[in-house]
Length: 52
Image (tube, rainbow, N blue to C red):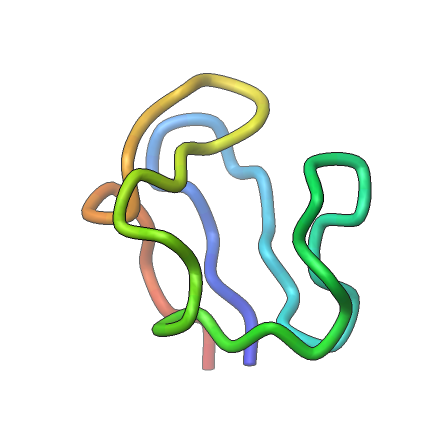
């Protein structure tokens, strides 16, 4: 599953994770910490949309 930042377009892919920021590959969106922010623009999880 992928989630896209509504503000800047950065994409979080669960299969890839975000290793540069300590998020292991395979980490589900719902398992990300509540204080997760977009590494590009800094908005919170509530500013992301699920990509079909």
